[in-house]
Image (cartoon, rainbow, N blue to C red; front, top):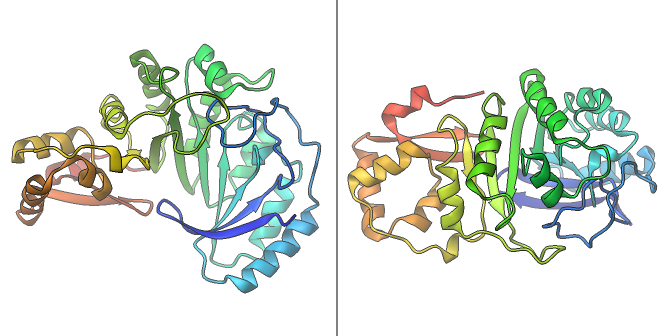
Length: 312
């Protein structure tokens, strides 16, 4: 089975060619409630390991076939940082990728390992997951292997964010009734307040999950976004926009909404009815609403807020 897949077009990361470091089976140190893969007991180490030479040969072939790429995305049927030769692999990829960026999608569990920490510093882009900041909730939603501690993960994420020179993204996936309560949001807010990152993507279940759990509506995600510190670069990532019911917003309500939380065009299409969209465009034309770009995503906010919004 080839370890290379794609390219796929991602709104967040562009044209992406994937490398699956566990193509034949799920190997993960989490067994998340929401995982789209078949449930499997969480393990600490990969047992089925693809040789680096095989991966690099497949990648060379794919790059000849698909030269116009934005990122090479390192992932797995499980957790890619469990791959024992990751440091060597990244060095080999750097030798053949040219101007293409490297990206890894990690659950953060191994970031407290200094070898993994230093390896990820070599990448151009890193996406780290953090679904909960309270130990009991972390164990409930992510079902980690024995010995994985959420406190150490949070400390490592903060430390990594101050060392990493590339683009850092944090992802939180919300599950109804598991990590969406007020105390969970507050704990996540506190955990992320000192993390320097380009975006914090919040989303929910949009594929059939491994266990019988439910996702949130776009409206619920939008309400959660407002409960985070306004300085945090929150971005709602959801395929449930279509189920939202657009409403009527006055000029002042539009500005107040954007003041509390910058929104993308997709967000506003879901929230604002046609008349409100017209009012929004008028406010843009008057210079009262501006936009900023955060790693391929355009956000709209009151023009007066642009200078004070935190950047990495």
